[in-house]
Length: 424
Image (cartoon, rainbow, N blue to C red; front, side, top):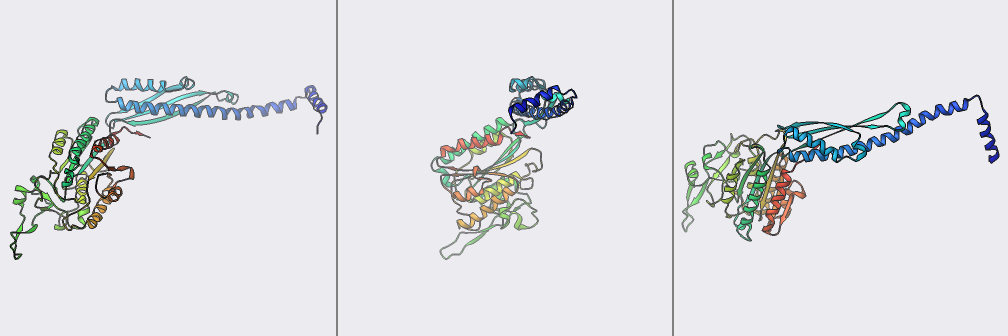
């Protein structure tokens, strides 16, 4: 081990060394070492500045999205600049050099590209005096384009426990939220599909090629079982009915298609209950939507499958309804809210609930495969497992134990659908 005296003697010799070779080598080595250390330190400072800048412009983008409808482009740019500066830490605020703000009112987007220049400290020794920092963010305001189908159980059991009254109020609350969120008539549209074992449509559609007539039934039967066969004609259907039954299997769980063959067509049928409210296709007529809700009457048995399929029909571009936009439309989101309070009990083919459940499961699977986000709501009664599996995700299934919960749930769904979203 080197003694203290020896070490001191070495230092004295280094001080007396006039050749300077060691000193020169030490100096040459020290400069790049300081540069490496300086770059690491300054890079960390620049990274922290970038994080602070990114957080500030994300916040500014969201705030701007909320005020975009109320401010001019000039006012919005000034507000964004102020928001960014107000949200930056003091040390980064002095380094901020400004932002490029692009406002597209057609696409309803705000893009922010912000920059800062971080002065270096130790890195100066290798000729780096500053480090540029940049980041960007984008937000949309209002809502995306939305098409929403309200598929609502109108069966007899909805008359109990205040369910129909609560459903009507909840539906109107949802419609109001969507109306308030809408910027233009093409942005948000809603359809209403009341169902029991059938659906009922506008009888003015009687001549459409996708409707099939000729369904028969037995009437005027005597004690010996002798009956008269009655055939449903177009004129009778159009005069006093307007109901549609399940399509032939397996078309009963699908949407649209060509209607060249009769098994693909929608069978016109007698209405089991003439008070069943009619389907209202997609519309932004808020008055018409509220009025259709008012016509809903609880009557009849349950066939969830036909409700799901006709809700899907209102959201697709092909017949029987053509109001929907194609799924390729930019920023278009399609949703369905499927609500029921009971088990499947009857469709065109059977009263076996398990068999009808299987058709409902297939219908839900096909709806989701079509790109439709599906919410399901069980009101007090009904098959919880069936409805939970029908929903697009577990979080989109609601189990309502009291009818008074319907309005808060509908409001929450409406707010979720119409929320401002930050996009990257």
